[in-house]
Structures are given as structure tokens and as C-alpha cells.
Length: 321
Image 1 (cartoon, helix red, strand yellow):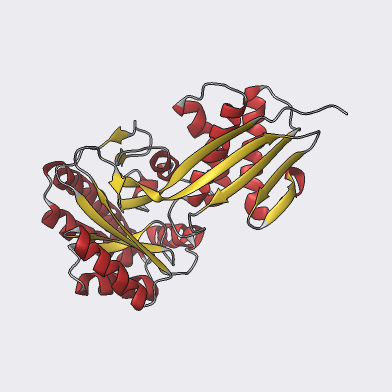
Image 2 (cartoon, helix red, strand yellow; image 1 turned 30 degrees about the vertical axis):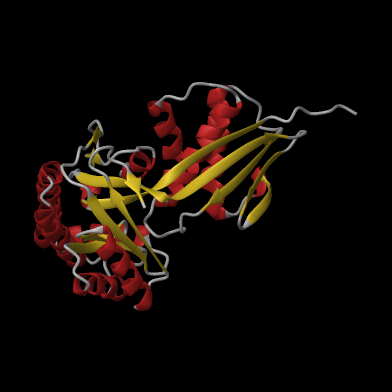
């Protein structure tokens, strides 16, 4: 009997949050996203005889027979092995994630990033950011149809980013520590539906819709200035304004609005939906860590499925709890 070598490689990626600019980014407007490292996706690759297997919370078996929700990851894996010039067999890929699926936190992008990283690590190959993004884009197209690219850029960055479709992504420095609260409505966000709603409104109500999209772009520009200078009061007001415009576009709903109202009553400097909308999560800006904790508790009492709070530190531009 031939003894197979115990060869294992691991890849991981964190979630993401859209601070400003969701939906408008699809139409070429700028957006700001931040990494969300309290939730992560991990991919483990191990050598096995013959087959190409994948395991996750809801499937365990041959990669060829995956359910529809994993077809994007399957295509990503096949293309990654093709780029690596390796056979499509002899591997067991295990996926674990703490990122709630379908909540606008970048779960599909993070999982794809983790998978690609783990495969390149397994074969001891250097992975450039350009190649990583091209491979992850395959999975994102399955998940979102016509993705802007912001999810995969944010989920692969350890810094807040300035994103505009077709332009180079830029890291953003911040002038003051930010205290962030995130709450999950407990309902899967329907990104495809939300994107379709905006597209339909773009055709049926072009004046109003174009105005909201331009306004969301302007909000991102002003939010960038507020981040750099550390003006959290202005940033909070811009976050509130962004939620108003997103509601105008028809992508918020009663569940999100309820949690946004709770956060504001608890003293949030600003609160809005984050991600695609029509379910999913909301984000709020608190004045300090103590208030952020109290706000998260209040959101849980008012029906949030889960709530997180953390700070984005000025000195390192990374999160701590």
C-alpha cells in the first residue's frame, strides 16, 4: 500500500462592509469599503487519492456534483487548477466560514479568495493580486450576475479602500479611530433583486434614479474627506444621507429600517444598510466602544439575529475588538 504524504495548505479571508456607495458603484460611482475581520472564511486543501472532493456545512462530496449554490466555487476551483497547470483530482477542499451567507458581508468573495489562496499555497506558487482577482471574479459572477468587484477587493484588503469601477483601487488612511456596529436582520439579502430594482427604476424613473446614484457618488467623495480628516460627525451625517438615498432607490426594507432607527435612538452618529439590501445587514457609527457595545445589545433586543462591534484604529487602519 502506498502511503500518501500528509500535505495540507490553508487559505483565509475576512468579510467586508460597504461604508458608502453600494449600488451606485455598479454605475461607475465611487464607493468606500472596509474589511470586517470579525467574520472569516477558511479553506483547507489536503492531498487524497484520485478524487476531487469538497466539504462544507451543507455539502460533502465530489466537486462535480455540487449543488447550485456551489457552482461558482466549482468553476473557480477548476480555473485555478488550470492556471496552476495541475490535474483536477487528488484533492480534498474543506470550507469553513463564520460569515453569514447572503447578508451583504462578502461571503461569496471571501470563500473564493480563501479557496484560491489555499490552492496556490498547496502547490507552493506565488499568487499575485491581479490573478487572485481574476479567479475570484469567476465565482462572483455566478453569485451576483454582474458584480462591481468591490466585494472581492474589500475582502482581500486589510485596509479601507476607495473603489471606482475601472480604476485602480486605493487604500484609505483615516484621521481618527472609528467605532463600528453591525447588525444582521436574520434575513438573506436578495442582491440580484435589489440590483434589478435599481435597474428597473433607472428605466422607469430615470431622473429620480440618476439623481440618487449621483448623490451616492457625492456622498462617497465627502465621506472620503471626513475619513481622512477624522470628522466623525460629518461622516455620520453622510451615512444617514446615504441610507435615505438607498431607500429612495428601493433597496431598503422595513426590517433594515427598524434596526437603523434603533441604532439612531441609541445615539448612533449615522446608520444605514450595508451591501445589497432587501434583507442582510446594517452598519452604524458609534461615538466610542462603550456606546458601540450598548448599541449592539439594543439591536439584539430589538430583533437582530446577531450584532458585532469593533474599532478601526487610526494608527494601523485595522480592526480590534
